[in-house]
Structures are given as structure tokens and as C-alpha cells.
Length: 538
Ligand SMILES: Nc1nc2c(ncn2[C@@H]2O[C@H](COP(=O)(O)OP(=O)(O)OP(=O)(O)O)[C@@H](O)[C@H]2O)c(=O)[nH]1
Ligand SMILES: [Mg+2]
Image 1: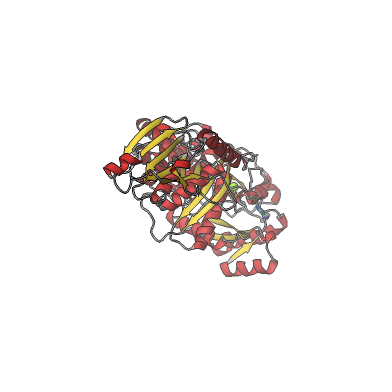
Image 2: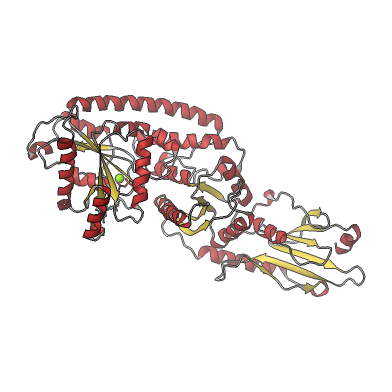
């Protein structure tokens, strides 16, 4: 090869299979060669390709940066460059290979050059032991009761602090959807690649890391365009998800009622449709697994025409749903009883508070988005008033617009509220950002004109004085939904908001009831309401 190469002044390369079969012969130019499409040699993302590239260098130069990039991106068994001297046949061989997980976090090993005449190696034996080592590394992170492992990635020019906060939340989202987070990488490049976000260098490092750790799923904190998902997935053969898909996946797992299922599936399909235009393996890699499952562990349809039909059908269902909800609303409006809705960032403790107030037993979990379906009940309110209280789906920053649209009927119901109780997790280190995110969404939903009460929850996690300071600063009250005795402040604040501040409130029935009365749910309207919501108490 080297002799020929010297003669034609071009690099020559061969791609060799494990047992020595020559699969490709490539003739390049003086500086390099172009490797053909190797997709038919796909051996699974977590394995080496089963091909080594042996090629000539004309000047006897060692492996180039490009050689090493190809080694990593293509997961070749080995990259070899050789050069011989035209006159006496002497020359040297340079080789490099990928490394299994190692303490120095090295991606590859470049072997010391050896002379062509002395080079001797039992390749098959060597590659088998290398693969064994890779597999040991991959198994070193066991799946602890979850189905998937993933590496999280954030690429943006925003401040490091805000990227770290967002990453923290992405991690919680991933865990809430049953993913074990192996590593998270934040990159703040000067230039963001429009096609792959991160540059080639980072991408290959990531790819090798995935192979070292046995991870074939990466989740971006940024939302990716259909083109970006396709490019990254095609280039790396990894399964690629973005923040929106992850949130949609959690919703799909949590949707139990018919309403919820329709809303979630519609949001998922609307997200998918523009992505199906790209002929790509990216989506087919997801079928059935995380990001590709619909409500109730069904597979998401990824055939364009069928997706369109299904969207059409679901939209009709959604319309019916809207009508049903409207009827329910007008029934409720007729009663003239004020409606309080608990809203707030996901995991703030909304359901915990709702359960305490109404003595219900709905699902409460230290997970994001444990509640999807609205629940409504009469409040066990100690004041001599009658109110209806509603628990709602949690909000989050950058709530996917597909979800906003699909959950419109749910949000529309909030419009009927007489008071929004904005519950805030005071113990969360970034609660001010969460307040901001919620208020931004309220604005988008045209709910900003409804009277609002800021209630800081989880005060038990904080120093008393600190809590007081925050309440003063944000004009709110603090409670702990775990301690009923702390609710006194909340009742007083609701009392003030509903009956003292807003005398002019239309439709608010001022019928005074005794405590016992307000526990009585024999009233037809209310028992019906609970049934209609058919959300199952845990
Ligand atoms: N320490 C403390 N933990 C609380 C308090 N209130 C709720 N929690 C916990 O916070 C977690 C979330 O509570 P949920 O009631 O499910 O929160 P949510 O706002 O309904 O959440 P989503 O439905 O997921 O949006 C659970 O682990 C609760 O036990 C509180 O006052 N103090
Ligand atoms: Mg909840």
C-alpha cells in the first residue's frame, strides 16, 4: 500500500473487518481520504464498529486530529497510519484506539510509533479484550430500578448559573420520568453550531463517554429544531431527546383519565408532526422507549398520514371535552359559590395543600408533574363561608407550547376562579425564578386579571425570621401544607381577599354556613363534580 501510495502521491486506506476481510478500499488525495458511509456496519451504539482503518501517510506524519475524530465518531476498532521510505522500505506505524472508562477521563490512547518491519500484533485477541473492558465499564453503572440511563447536555450562551439551575431542573424531570442520570455536561461555546449545537470536538468526546458508560440516550436542556435532532442523532447514532419531549413523556406516563390522555397524546403528536417531515432514523430510534411512548405505555404513531388522522380525531374529542367542561362550569357558576384554584410551579405542594384542605387523598409525590388532572372539591373551610377549591397541573418554565394548547380546556377552567392561590415552594433555592415563570404563564393564559394570593409553602424548611422576610418582600403568607396549624394565616388571607377586599365581587354568595354544613357533601353538585373528575385518590 505504501509503495503504491508513494507512486500515485495519494493516500490509500483499507477498512478491515475483525477477521481480516477487506471491506473497503479508499483512494484519497495527498492530505487525506473520505470514509464511506458505514451505516450498514452498525453494531449498536455501545459497541465498536468492527472495522479498523489502515491508511498511508505520504510524509510519515503521525495521526492527525482528523484521524482521531474519525476514530471517535465512527467508533472504529483502531486507526492506523503508516509510511514507508521509497528507497529502503523502512518506515513507521502510528496507531490509536478508544479507551474504556478511565480515571483520567481519556478518550483515546495513542500508541508509541513502531517500525513497520517489527510490527506484530494478534489483533483478534487484542480487540476482544478491549471490548471486554468496555463492557465492564458499561456495567459499572447499574440501573437502579429504572429503565434507562442518560447523559444530560446543555449548550447555550446564557450565564453559567442559569444553565446550572436549569440543568438541576432537567435532572429532576429526567428522574421523574424514570431515567437514571449518569452525567451532565454544560457547554458555553463562543459560537453555537446551528446544526449540532455543540462543536465536533465536544460531540466526539460525548460519544465516547456514552460508549464508556453504556449510555445510548442524551437529553438536551435546550429545545432542538427538527433538523438538529435529526443531525445529531444521525451523526452519533444516539437517541436524542430535548426538554419538551421529556416533559411530554412525563405527561404521557402520568395521564390516567380519558381527558388527560387525549390532551397529552394530542400535544405529543403535534410536536411530532413537523419532525416527521425529516426522513430520519432519529424518531424511529425512539419508538416505544422514552420520548416515543404515548399515554398508557402505547407506542406513538410515527406514520405521517396516520398521525394527521389521529390529530384530527383527538381534536374532535377535545372539542367535546371543552363543551362538557363548559356545562360543568355554568352549573358551578349558578351556585354562586366562590372558586379558589391552587396554581403554582410543579412540586410546590399544591396537591398536599389540596388534600389537607379537603381531606382527600390524591397523589402527592416528590416528583415533577405528579398531578395532571384537575380535582375540585368543597373546601373544609373553617370560616363561615362556602368555597370550592381546585387543584391543578403544575407549571414549569418554558412549558411546551404544544402542552399549553392541549391543556387549554384545563386552563380555561381557571378563568372561572375567583381567587388564584399561587403556591410557592419557599425552600427551593430558585423560588424567585419560579414565581416569575408562573406569572409569565398566567399572563400568556390571560389569567392575570384574576385576584391572586401568593402563598409560600414548606415554611417548615426555613428559619422563621427568614420566612417572615420573604413574605414581607413578596407580599404573601407562608404556610406548611404538612402542618394544619399553619393554615390559619392562609384562611385569614383568603378571607381578606374574598370577602373584605372585593365587596364588589359579582356572584359571590355570602351565605353563612356552620362548619358542619361545609363538610356535608351530600349536595348533588359537589358529589357529581368529584366523580366527573374521575381522578383516582391514591
Ligand atoms: N417539607 C415540606 N414538604 C412538603 C410540604 N408540602 C408538600 N411537601 C412535599 O413536596 C412534594 C410535592 O408535593 P405535591 O403536593 O405533590 O406537589 P404539587 O405541587 O402537587 O406537584 P405537581 O402535581 O407535581 O405539580 C411532596 O414530596 C410533598 O410531601 C411542606 O409544607 N413541607
Ligand atoms: Mg400535584
